[in-house]
Length: 311
Image (cartoon, rainbow, N blue to C red; front, side):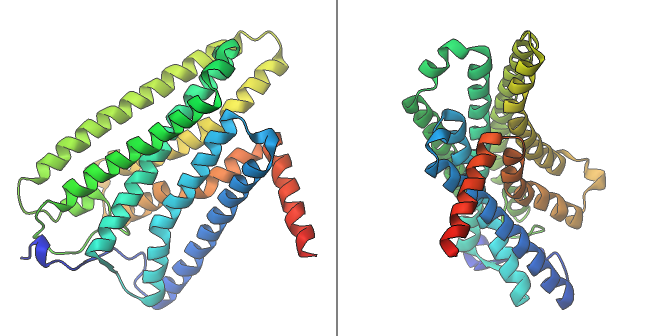
């Protein structure tokens, strides 16, 4: 039995036990990480450099790419380092920092997706008021609110989680530090306080989800009233990338946290946590660039410019 004051490090759950599989995992994670970095960095650079993309929808996409870059950089580098050096350890302070940044970035992404749903609602359902309601100052305020809310959420939960006494060892059944697995090590009823905060957070998350659903019901109704099929297709195409990104983000998280306890196991939890923490940041750039001609044109121009500069 130990208490939290004597814990200097935690042991993370490894994906593989044999050295060969650990090295294979390292190269696989490195490929995914580099792809996520490259995709999001290209989108950030293309939006920043192309004045035609200086619109609200691309401003929010720029913020989303920054959040994706941060979230994938919070979990994968440590997992890669552990697999490369054949260790499972993460320091107590490192675990707290990782938990804070993961919460900050993942909650920030969810808040931003809610804001992006509102942007699509205003663009399609209230087009005459769009420029007034979605001016540059309003967009900056909404993005700042998303980042600020995520920061306060992450700070509150990180401080509260690491103030709880821990006496059930230091082994986490997870490949990065996250609240439910840290709470499993608690040794007092004080963990109920964190569960209470999580309950409030889940209620707020469902409230935001309800707002997104209502927004898209109104969007679909407005699109179906458009007389031309071409106009309907154009309106749907502006919403489709956001819907896909939102679906990937929410579905992977819900499968991980709301699956039946009867099918729960450490390695299943490991795979599911990988899906919701790593897959969305890696595939979001691909989703947004596939059906967006303006963004594809800007990316092509950027890539050609980079290639010619190297010649």
